[in-house]
Length: 93
Image (cartoon, rainbow, N blue to C red; front, side, top):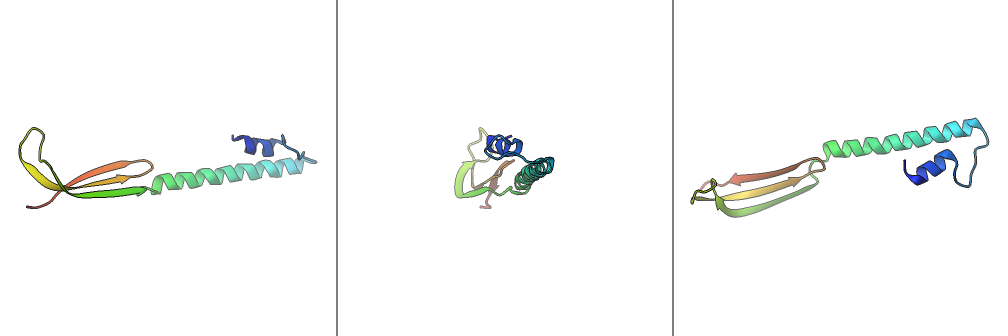
């Protein structure tokens, strides 16, 4: 738990609790805020796959390793929070 959260939750700062009800409310509020932050992070990680996208067209590269034949292709890179996808798409000659 981060230090500011622990400080405000457990009463280590200036303010002290005057009743058990305030203690319960403050702890519940802290748990709900932390749960909301974790839920947002989970949603971004699962559905935020298109974080950075890039293409490079007109690339001359070998068709297969150790063969002298070359093709013209497009290289695409998709970087997400949980995945990296590199695509080589050959163009018809």
